[in-house]
Every structure is written in structure tokens, then in C-alpha cells.
Length: 105
Image 1 (cartoon, helix red, strand yellow):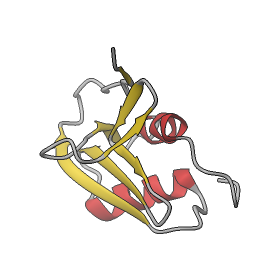
Image 2 (cartoon, helix red, strand yellow):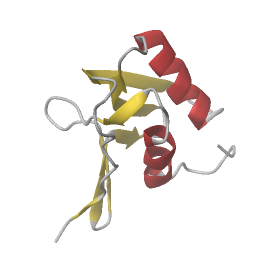
Image 3 (tube, helix red, strand yellow):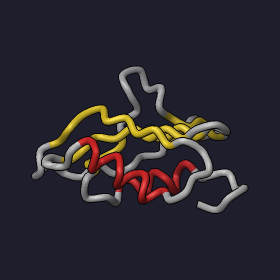
Image 4 (cartoon, rainbow, N blue to C red):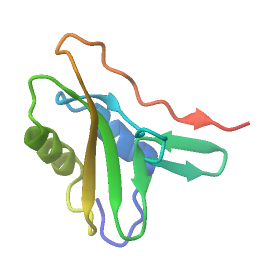
């Protein structure tokens, strides 16, 4: 990421879901990991001035350490802490869940 530029939540979601260790995004038990933007919501990515939180469903057999390292590596230097929350683990043959940016009516 570029220093001094606010990260784009949708772009981060695309980067993370492309990883082989990640089956999809996970917004947490109550949907608390999300970025609310005008007219849309990006689940699984929460961008704040002091931190970035990414919620994922990992893909077996990747370990938690491997998943966290892959997500942080995909984001690159963020200039703030990156917290990776693993909400679930999917079987190795599970279909990849695409990131869905919800349109708010």
C-alpha cells in the first residue's frame, strides 16, 4: 500500500480472496468486521485510521500462522497494525467464496 493514502476496502478484499490460503472473507459473529461506505458495505474488511482488520475463512491445511502471514504479505506495508481474524476453516475442496460488496438501497 502507498504511505499516506487511505486503503480501499474493496481492493483489499480482492487481494485477500485471491490467496490460496483463504476460502473467503468472514465478517465475524455479529458482522462487526466490515467497512461501511456511501451506498455499500464491504464485509470482512474494516479500515480504521489506527488499524486494519481482515476477517477470513481459512483453507485447510493452512495453519493460522500461514494464513496470517499470507494476508499481511498481500497487503504489504500498511503503516498501521493489520489484525487477521480467522472465523472458520474450510475443507481443501470447498468452493472459493467471492467477495461480495453489498449494495445498500
